[in-house]
Image (tube, rainbow, N blue to C red; front, top):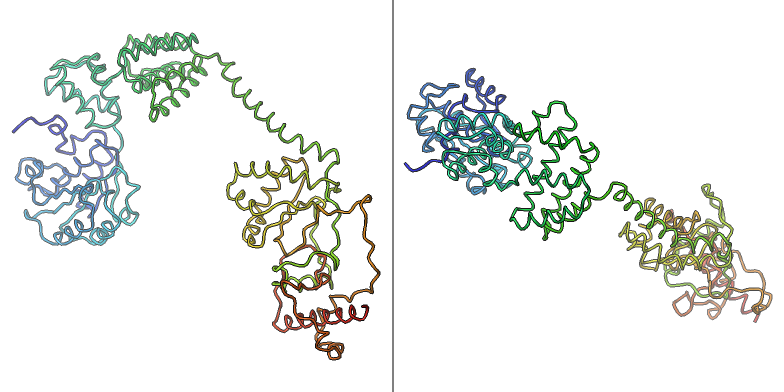
Length: 635
């Protein structure tokens, strides 16, 4: 047989050989002793912590000639076949490459057959989280009610990706990362058995770089034995792993303590010219400052710092020159640096910028963001001053609302197509609505709407930066008037949905807050759709100096409210000739303007019954006929 790597050669063969997973070993050995082995297990944890190794030990314990036993003999045919990976009753499946429903169906067809050796058939499914949803669903029934001779062992590094229905059918064991001293002890035992001469500093570095994974640690030891032969020293370990020389880290720490930006840039140039990996250098520098921080804040740093006695004394001396706050600031900056280097196309530039910032005096670094904040606030205040100054000086306001007469512009199609609006207004004429208490209105001035219009682009721009959906809805409207402290926003006829979203409590409050911030006045907004309420005419306002047209005096017009509630046609209709009865309103011949009540636009109320609608239309028709006859008599 050819060469076998150390991590395969020294894989645990019994529960006693397992390192660092005492809680799992104890549970499984007790279950074997008491004959309480479950039908399904889930082993989850980081790589290299013993999931597959313990699964094979459990399989040997169940199929050993002395089993079930917590101490398999490793000499019988069953144990040796499982160790060699050739046992017919232990089936290992890689779910990363066999993740479909067809593979699970194949298991379902074969699971009913008895084991070849007469013991227990064990299915070990590694990386089970890679199975598809369909495959998981096909596995459910087998896990819930498997045959008595079958045990499933599922292994995964990402248990959160396993379906909850799978988790609930398994006994779950969470593997933890191994401690540094546990790794070091195992490495020392392997090195002695293999005849490798390695010092404690080298073992400590290997154990630390493994990050809790036994397989990684043993693989590194195997690689080092090939690199140096049978003698391994610290410099060899650092060279093979690409770690930075400790003297360079001490030198750079002194430069940062001295706040010498020029020396820091020269140092980085030397590192680049020497061919060091800048990302690895940043990680080692972060670890160096972490060691300084631990030494500066603990009485016994030896437990938290991996270093030789000489290095530890040197670290203690250097840590005395740093304040704890300086060390924390340096670690924060280096943490950000390591994150930025992951995606930076130019690692040197990012490292140089970070070191220059770390070498800046504390007051200068803290002053820069404060100055930037002040400049930003000053710019915001400057943008608001013109609008706010005009509001405060009384130069802005909207004229009072002009009553709509018969000579005003005709109604739009939307007004004629919604008779419910007339019903709602006639009901308002009969009984004024009781409005909720409102904020005290602001006295309007002559040019207030013009100021709102000038400020509206700034309002939209600010809303766009904060809430894009609200900005998109506001593009369908424009401010047309100011009534008291209410800014009237008019939406076009096909933007009713946009208006509803703006009238939502959250969006309405948001827009009002922006208006208040940019104008300095507590405005509220009022929305209407074009055609439901006549906008205030700002271009045709009448003033004291403009000529006014004197209209002839006419007879008082009938009350449209009484016409709306009429249930029968009046006798005047019967007396009127066919030529006196006007046609129904059309686009070219709009209805008389006096029918439009001068009331604020509101959501029309639905009629309670169809007969109310018929009576309303009849009342409108009667009122139109009567008005036509009066005009004819006057003429």
